[in-house]
Length: 495
Ligand SMILES: Cc1ncc(COP(=O)(O)O)c(CN[C@@H]2CONC2=O)c1O
Image 1 (cartoon, rainbow, N blue to C red):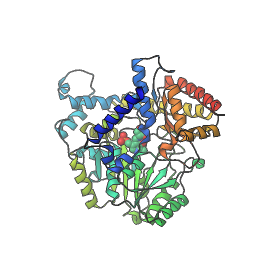
Image 2 (image 1 turned 135 degrees about the horizontal axis):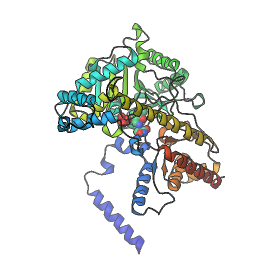
Image 3 (image 1 turned 90 degrees about the vertical axis):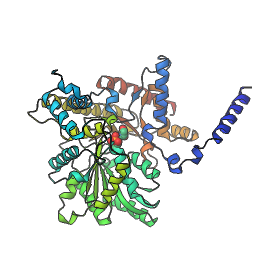
Image 4 (image 1 turned 120 degrees about the horizontal axis):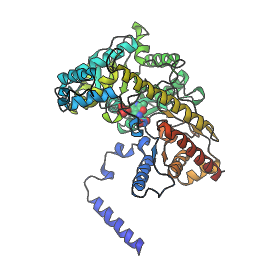
């Protein structure tokens, strides 16, 4: 009886859907095709389990969900930087400027007043390219970082790096055979956006054995293959420090990339959102691609580079504010005018996101009233990230069949896992990738949500998963233990 009822409900639903104007079948095909693993099937399941725990706390073998699938520090109890939030609060409620309270330091009051004089109100639309004085702060930050001039007119403030990357990729992909070179493994914003804009992803493989380094031979191989298939490669995306791989490129590697792009007449898109997440600064300091290009002298004066940054990462972690920027180097002014036109359709990026970019790039300086607190908060977060990344890497390397490079940068570890043949067969029987199955079982047994390596693309026949090391330090021990218990049980189950 139940099956008949279910059948008729199903038929009614289908009939009802068929009457809709907006149906999946009638949607833009590229939208239906796109995948974004960081918040994919496993993350969705994690939310279902979180809801279940909120209703019946003792119904699962764990008491909380630990989101290690997304670089979202303040979701995991990381505190915001006090000075940043004081300025934001004062800008949001200017009457506070009149209060005598010593809660707000003088330099926070000063900065808030400066921003308010420039924007009028946090509730007003700003310039579509971004608040001019914030773009000046970004330009000053870039000049100080690199030692080369930066022009605020070449800087676009955005609602995070994601829409910036999408604007540029959308502008580049004028027909389906336009190729964009992307690193494998890669952050799925790139594959998702290239699919969404109906372009061609041109993979170049990072070498896990060389700590995810890239080689000019591999770049040449990837490009030659694409061109042999009639693909018009126009840009090369590089993520440095890497997501999910956590490597920080050597200056030598960076020069090879720039020389390759110049020789092959390819625009370089440098995603540098993790530029302050540098955990081995002595052996692997961060260099911007802007500095590398400018250091190569006049023959690179026409080298086209677009660099991306964000307030979501670093020690700032203000993901929800939606603040970021991209800097255009040697980009045709008419192309930038098109960028501006597109930006103006959305009127302006979130004003608080823009101000956060200004605060990130122009923080308190030595001698400012807020500097001691700012310095301590930044250093504490940094040192904790170093400790947590090392703790998790050590724990992962103790697991059977798991090997994990230590993080040189970013917020993730990307261990390779050698799975028993029976596990690979069981996954295939389920129509799943083996690391997908592993991560789903990990979630269902421990509440830990990570992202399978298949979500970042990976070399055929290798399996990985990506975990952040953002769980609060006082939970890292328990987190590592539950991972170890699960892993042993999993390996025994499929031995
Ligand atoms: C390499 C890289 N570029 C751009 C972005 C987008 O940042 P915005 O927040 O500024 O849009 C991310 C976000 N990292 C995602 C989100 O959390 N975990 C991730 O892998 C990223 O890792």
